[in-house]
Length: 263
Image 1 (cartoon, rainbow, N blue to C red):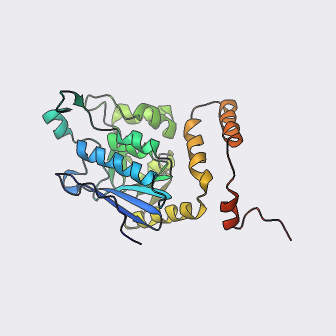
Image 2: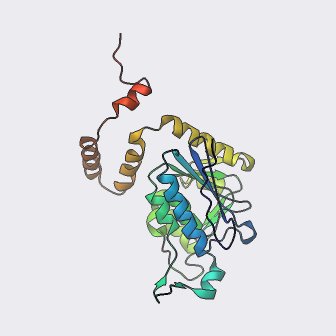
Image 3: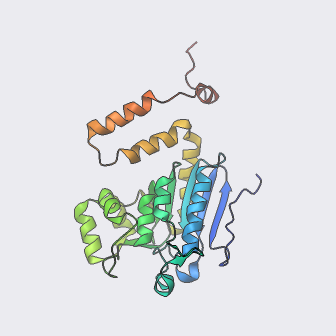
């Protein structure tokens, strides 16, 4: 397969790596010397890479991970302290894009492969993915309140949905680390695997997704997101409306050997 990788060109160098193979896009935060702290440029590049993968007809699943030893803690606080926002030539001040929102906007299944420490903004990004595969070296925490800020990428909505309100309040107020096995027990992650097997395991899950993907996959994933928090009746109405508006791809069914009459 030809190299179709999205390569962001930035003054900082290759801080974001994207590889596409077998219909799987792997996006890697690549600033290990700064524990993958995300500069504004990195956040914008990540958002662009997610959009590119989502609109690429050659991609069915996306994996987001970090270069060891950590996943990310979110924004680069030194950059924030130094210059806050970026001022455009026209005088308007602009913040970097929200990478957690970009994750939530991605229609294709998005797997977060958490390879190490995942805190604060990094946790918001992980929670914004469709599901999480964690290394046995992974650990999670929300330190927003501890450092004196309020979350802005969705923590207060996402964390209680994952672990329940009481545990979310405990994690935020104590800022304590939740290690991999506890994260699995409380429903924060889907799977915990040995560190050296993390990316291969995530690729295995993505390969299963690729094999099962139909035109209905992204639409159904969107229904899950759109109905989150609704009552059963409201959610069922959304599902029924989507089904009424859906056109079955009979050609795709035939290619997969589905829907054939019994002889």
